[in-house]
Amino acid sequence: MSRLKISVCISTYNHCRYIEHCILSVISQNVSAEVEILVGNDGSTDGTTEIIEELTRQYDGRIIHIHRRENIGPFENLKLLILKAQGDFIAHLDGDDYWQPGKLRAQMSFLVNNPGCVACYTNAWVVRDDLTPMGIFNNTIPVRFDLRFLLCKGNFLNHSSIFYRAVYKVNILNFPTNFIDYRIHIELAMHGALGYINAPYVVYRYASSQSMIRLANEQVRNLYLEAVLYGLSNDSIDDVYDVTLEDFVARIVRDGLAAANPKFLFRWFRVLSQNIKKERARILLFGSIGGLLKLFAAILRRILTILRLTNELRVINER
Image 1 (cartoon, rainbow, N blue to C red):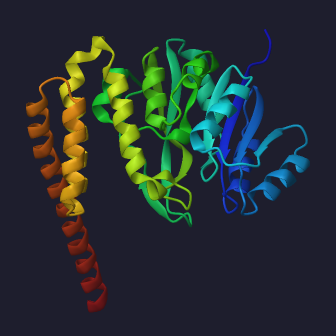
Image 2: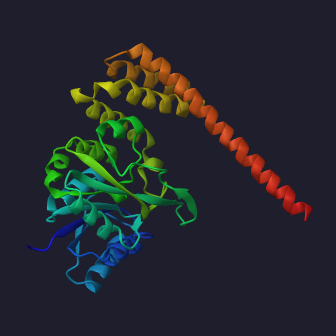
Image 3: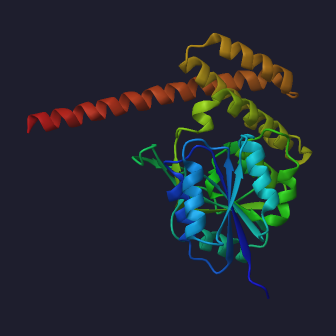
């Protein structure tokens, strides 16, 4: 039996502060498989290119630097990396994130021992841009879950933790021009169960300098809705249609109220009214109630945090 091969697809653009740590975290992985490292450099102008070129020389033959002079955007950059991947398994890694030791070994072992799973994900540490810790990405997630669970719970999976069987890459290559990682997770879940390892094998920088959350938040919302509607187009999961869209409406209401932006709410309710095909009034009503509850819970958490910090400061001052 030939040795298994893993293709690691690293997407990067102007990540000069992060890319060396990112690539070295892959180089240091100890796994019983051949590992090809594909770095898609999408026209970086900040010194990222020079760092990748130096690492490519230093680790001769281990890194394939795909340098594009013109920026084609994150979606096409990732798709071209996937197209070039030659492995039995494919892993994605954003250029501003990095992995902990043992990630690839744990995920390959999981898929080898669970032939019914098409992909495997892991938990992640969430840090600020300067690596100041913020917390853990997920609470308890089942070891195996399906499309229904994924749609009901929303996008709780970290993109830099994805590890899937390469036979399904053609499905991703057929995606539209723009998409987010949630669309990938949904597509994979349409073909079988997804696995989850609760250990935080990924370090995820929240809203880093080139993050879509920071640079294109509204685009993310639009693509999120597209991913949800794509997943719900599967007639076999009609039983989760209402709860999935109610959750999306709740997120919109929470964000609109928190920003005190009636134009935002009006526009999104118009969009949702055009796209929700079943029980429209009920979904919008229940989703709005859910959004109010989410906002109230967020305010309550903030108040409790302020009270706790105030009490801790008082105790310190009394000493």
